[in-house]
Image (cartoon, rainbow, N blue to C red; front, side, top):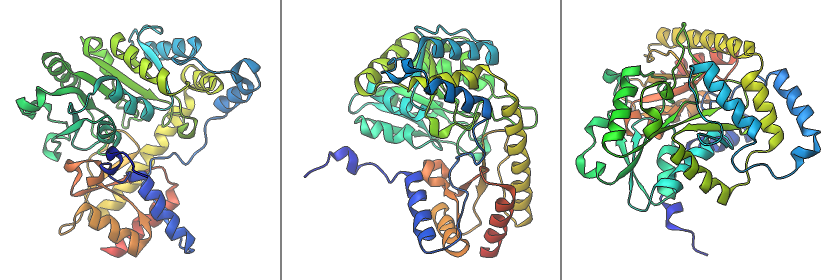
Length: 385
């Protein structure tokens, strides 16, 4: 039996590796604190669960769903964009439902990338921006991101020979893993760059509802000309604690949305309609739970950054996401320090280089952990220094 070469070229998937290492420790009876994965530790709000309970009893929802998403769900996504950002998107031609944003990110490669084509990928970013290209036979060019540049991906430094073969460019702000944010002016430059070089610009806005200190993340779709070259992905996972529900949507350029929908219709059968009904309640129902969630994460951010400062570790300023980006101590690499903390303190942290070459020298700490466990984890990390 011979697997495809594309499988051999895939790096170990970061979060699967984290799960594996945790399982090994737990099997030995060891108390492990995981700060590695951004999976909310509080439940999905009751009004969303109640909507699901009602929807799942509707026999009409037991049949195959629409490939592109139920009309009522696409209408809700369009209305949410209008309510949240003041942006008009056509629910029929500029909106498509996704089985979680990760699915959409992976499938967009099959719609646009031919073998040998390049995708411009953030130097620190969600691993699927790179691995999706490998699965499609494409290549990645990692755009440099530095602390001095506030971790804004430097697309303008891309060599001409790579631009000539590039089809797509990914951005994501607020950024996972660095928690960096982007300005409207940066988005304007990215749109102009994509237009000049005939690129599809894909903005992964998974953390748009998690902003701190009064900061409200913006949508790329708010910027002039965005629909001409871009699509944007939104997820119910983090804002509504629905990671396991697998429901999201993409909006933007009609041709790109149609191409993504064409791939999806040939690969999957759409989002379970009852889940879409629950997501409608999430998007258009009361938003109090989102505000409470943001307050909780802001409190945890303060707790973690204060704790890190006391033990001599430097955190990058954090205005959004559910992560804190931390410089490793002098003399350590990212993976080396993460391994040391796991072996000596039984605390899982994510090495920055797993998110791309610009992540070397950093680790990512997830805030999706109760306060007492965060405090204990920081104490354990201190004991290794």
